[in-house]
Image (cartoon, rainbow, N blue to C red; front, side, top):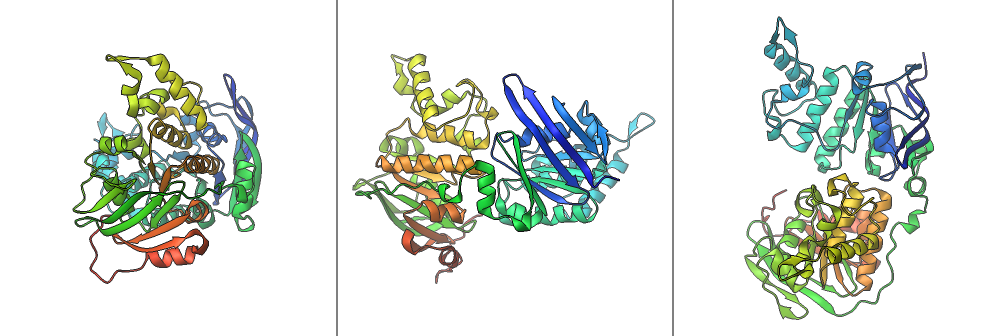
Length: 504
C-alpha cells in the first residue's frame, strides 16, 4: 500500500494563453487534514477541479492508493471516493435537504423513488453531524453553515474517503467555524482524509497537521504545521516579508473632517461619539454583534438615527439616504460585496462607474467611450486582474471583486470613506494591495474608517482605534498604545447600563 491515499506528480494544466498549474505536486496521507494555501490565482481552484475530474491535466499523473488513475469526468472521481465542498454552496433552495443530498443519485426500486428510505438515510447522516435541522426541511430555509453541513452529509452518503473543503469558513461566524472544525475532526477520526483550503491562518493552525503552499501556479513547499510561523507562510504565499504586509505610509494628520456626537439607534447602539481627520485611518473593532456595521450604515443613510448629530467639515449633516451621503462626500464599501457591493452579472467597467453614471451623460445620452476610459483608469489604479472591462464581476476572485468596489468609490469626490471588513475573504496578497490603496487614499487627504474583526490589520493600519461592545464605544486607543490584549479587554467590557440589544 502507498503511504499516500492521493498523490499528484508534476501536474500541469494549460488553458488558452494561461498556465493555471505549472508542474505542481501534492500528497495527502490517509486520515490527515492537510491545509492548502496560496493567493487567489495560485492554482488552488484548478487543482481542486483536476482532483475531482472537472479538468483533465495537460501533463503529470494522479495516483489514488498508489495506483495511477485518469479521471475523465467528476463521476470517475466520485466513484473512487473523492468529494468537494465549496465556499459558495451549489444548492437547490426549493427542494428538501434529502433531495439535495441525493440529487442525481436517487434510490429507485421497480421504477419508484424510495423516498422513505432516502429520508431515513439523510436523517441518519444529519444526526451523525449533530445538525439542528431535519431532512425534510427546505434547503433555502437553512443558514450558510447548515447548508455546508448538508454538503458534508452528501459526501458521506457517497462514501467519500477524500473530502476537499474550499474556503468553508469564509462566510461563517466564529461559533459556526468552531462547529465546522469539530465536524472536520470527526470526519478525520472516522477515517476520511481532508484537504482544507483557506486564507485564514487560524483554520490551518486549528485543524491541519501539514500545509502545502502554492504561488503563481507553482508548488512552493510542504511543511508540518507545528513547524511553520505566520511570517514563513506569508513569505511562501506572496514572496515578501511579513513586515511588508501593512504598507501604511507616515501621513501628517490634517484637520477634522468628520465628527459624530452621541449617535443612537433604538435597540441597536447608543451614544456613539468619535472623530476622523484628513489623512487619518480610524479603526472600529469589537466582537460580533458589537454594533460596528450598524453605526456605519447609519452614517451612510441606510438607517435613520433616533438621536445624535453628524458633522462633516464642521457643518451639521442630515443624511437621509445613501445617495444623500455620497452627494455630500461620505462613501461606504460594504462588508457583503457580492450582494450589496456588486451587480455580479454586469461587467467590471459598468460596476465601477455605476454610482456616477450621470457624469458620463449629456442630454440623456451616455458617452460610453468616456465611461470606459474612466473605468479602465480606475481598474488599473487598484490593480484589478481581469482580461477585459466587459468580464462579469462574478468571474473575478474575491480580492479582485473587492478592488472593483474600491475603484467605484474613487469615481466620487469623497471626504470620508467607510471600509467595512475590506479584506474579508481575500488572500494575503490582495490584502496587501487593499492596504496600499487605503494608504494612498489617506495620503490624498481622505479620512478613512476601517471596520475590521482582524486584529493584525487593525493594529497595523490604524492611527486610532475605537472599540465597541454591546452597542457602545468602550474605549479609544492611539496606535502607539494599542495591543491585542487591551483591545480584547475593551471588546468584552460591559457597560454599567443594560444592553441595548444589538442583533448579531
